[in-house]
Amino acid sequence: MNTPIEVEVSPANSTADSVEQIVYPVDKKRKRELLSYLIGSKNWQQVLVFCRTKEGAEALSKELKLDGIQAVSMHGDKSQGARTRALEEFKSGKARAMIATDVAARGIDIKELEHVVNFDMPFKAEDYVHRIGRSGRAGHKGHAVSLMSHDEEYLLNAIERLLDKKLPQEWLEGYEPSPIENVIEEPSGRRGRSRASEKRKMKAKLGIHKNRGKAKRR
Image (tube, rainbow, N blue to C red; front, side):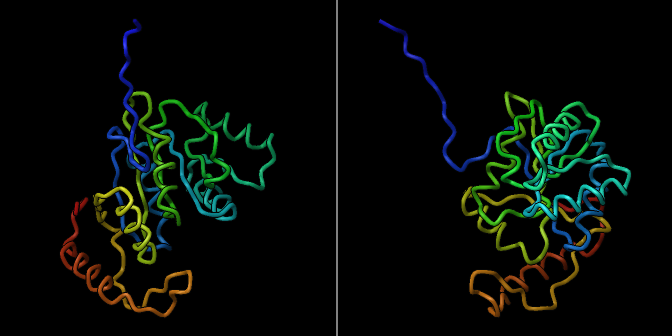
């Protein structure tokens, strides 16, 4: 008789305990600045950054280079040869950051990848799970960072509903988001709908954290 083997399978749409998750609220126009700060101040040597569009991925990679951070991009407009070269540069450490779209990043397997950044919050909550699942593999620790602007808060809410838990948030000194003064619009036919309750909630958060510290955890 064969000896039975117990196999543990993670539930669908769950994240590994080996991945530490954190959300940084920040104004959209300052996301690139904050990303450069995190890579430099925390000395990240290898980070996979997700953007929603190929135009955004290409632009961000160029902006990071201007900040002195070697970066490559991976998106649908890249030829297979260009993608292969970009991946080789990233794996070898020549490039510290790879900026990718969800579609272009499919099939990419990078061993011991520690840092994943959601530069743009994903429209589909399930994509969040797929994105951060690229780190913290094979017993290694992972670190998933999400840069969330005011108009992306509803996307974070969807992710938290999917995961059935709240994700920790921190306000970094010098990068605190500005108070919401305008009505936030949502896509898919929900434009013009005031999100007054969410505005009050965000203003309350900002009031609590108005005294700047190095990092303020929610």
